[in-house]
Image (cartoon, rainbow, N blue to C red; front, side, top):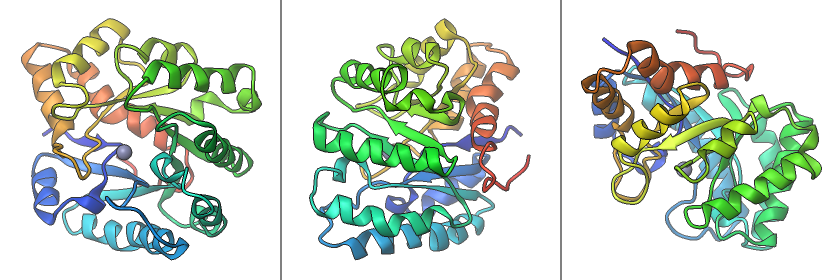
Length: 270
Ligand SMILES: [Zn+2]
C-alpha cells in the first residue's frame, strides 16, 4: 500500500473521524502549521494554549491512529494586524520554537498584503534565520501574484538575501505563482481543496507542466469545506492517468519528507 505525507493540515479544527479515515487511507505523517481559531483571540494566553495544545495533545491524538504529527509555530498572517496582540505573542512564541516536534516557523506571510503583516512576516523570518529553522510561507488567497512579487523582492534584493532558499517552503501555489517559486529555488506546496483552492486536475496539470521536483501536495484542511484525504485523492487521480509511481510518490510523500527532514526535530524516518 502506498503511504502518504500531508505537509499542511489544521487538525485542530478536525475530528477524530478524520484521523480514522486518514489513517486507513495510508497517511502516515502530517505537519500542522499555526492557524487562527476561527474567531478572534483576545489575549496572548490564547496563543500559548493553542501552541501547547498542538504540540502535546494533537501529537498524541494523531499517534492513536498511527499518524506521526509535527508542528509549525507562528502568529498566523490572518492575526498579524491585531496590535499590540500580534507583537506581544511573539515573545512567548520563542520558547515554543525550541520544543520537540516543532519543525518550522509557519505559516507566515501575507494575507491582505499590508505593512503591518509585512513587519510580522519579516520578524518571523529573521527569527527563523537566527535559529536556522525551516520557514513555511503562505501565499495570500487573493492577489497571489502581488504577494509573490513582494516575497521575491525580500529574497532577491531585501533582508532575505541571506536566507537559504532550500529551507523555505511556499504554500498555496497556483498556475500564477508556481514558476516563480521554483525559479527562486524554493519548495512549492499545492493545496488541493474543494471549491476555493486547486482541484486534483489543476494540481496534476501543474505537475505535468513543471515536473515533480520540489513540489508537494497538501490538503490545507481547516475550518472550511475541505478534504483531509486530498493527498491520497490526488495520488489516485495520478494513477488513473498512468503517471509513474515515482512521480506520484515524490509529490505525495518524498518531497515533503526531503524538505522537513532538514529540521533536526523531524525525527520520523520512513
Ligand atoms: Zn493553512
